[in-house]
Length: 529
Ligand code: NA7
Image 1: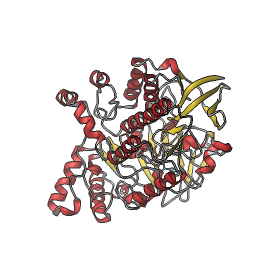
Image 2 (image 1 turned 135 degrees about the vertical axis):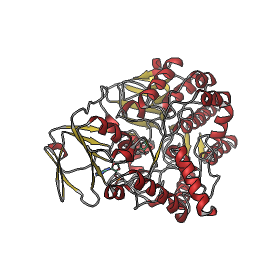
Image 3 (image 1 turned 45 degrees about the vertical axis):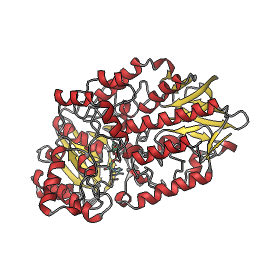
């Protein structure tokens, strides 16, 4: 049994910075990581085409001026190998590895109310004890394998985008089927199609995707950003999405039809999330949203030569942006290739996976490799699959059966001294994740420092404060169009999961300010014992 001040679970971007911050406080900290390396989500998601959808000079740590000045991002949106290389550089630069235990999955954690200690059990049999437990387990870290009848009968190779072989996979001359057209499907389809003999895409829900227009970052642009990095990071921290791009400066409904087309075209040409975040009314007005959506549909119709395929690819059953927007490179163009076919499994659902492919109501499809780009048990999956027991043995999974509740998305009643980074009820996936992680890490470190200085033995969220926070998160989301899609934001992609909108939608800047105010005023909403 190892005794530590703090155990951090997960060595992704949140866990690495948490370790660095706790060391600065002089606290004995160990990070426990399931993988054999750092990087979290970016360690596991190695599928072809995996890259971030926030610009890399923004989607990177801001806590060290030296680090952000010295690191060179080769592309506007970095690839998974580039991001993993960065994560490894950070681990080396700040000498983090000596306090990370790799290849070790946390299986259970239990709080002892008398001792005021957490006991943490792992899959390797090693046990740890700590005064504080920080869950840096990530929002998108538990792959969701769909419950497709007959999946076990398939004789070819099955690959999940979020659990990709480390050595990669060569699709050359292979026939491939892919299920799933979220970000992972949309990023990988063009590259699989390039190598495979034939690719069949099985699409249940069409998604909105905006071109990335990715490419090398021009030297001049890089120098400008580096010269102004501090100010740009400040701007990001004061923004809705934790990014320095200008946002919410145009209301679609206030524009004339000509101005509207011009604005939509401009954002389309800028690429990526600018298309969503430029418009103040895109996620609150159905009418505005429909105009933005129809512009994208018309782009799809113009790119995809087969009109029938184009219509299948046009999303019509949910508002633009209500499922996470995708950012692509040559996605729609891929459907103009001779070796790619598209099957609409909403119209003609999958009946079963067979030994050599799959069968829908109307046809039999054969392929050698099946790619599942079917997403994650998002936001809560990594927490509920661990047996986390708080005071009196209460199980977190049970407490969250009807939907997760966490005060500020950070702390849970009955689970003292446990903190969750980018947990449900915080901006998390609606913000630039790295900045969101930094904000949480700094705030949690400050709270732990406060507890240490004041000789507090237990910090716990008040049940009423937690209840009220959860209510506010739900009410705010209910005023937007985010709730009008069966998305993983709502847990709708996991059968049996409570349908609760999990991210905080009022903006990263409002959220950070609220957290700061709470810290400054003696932590109302927490019991400090
Ligand atoms: P997503 O966005 O959850 O996409 C999963 C896709 O898989 C989506 O198209 C689903 O269709 C489809 N899916 C899931 N289960 C099934 C079954 N049983 N049958 C058919 N199709 C299915 O996951 P991603 O990995 O692409 O992206 C997750 C996030 O990672 C992304 O938003 C970025 O933030 C990075 P559905 O829409 O449910 O009809």
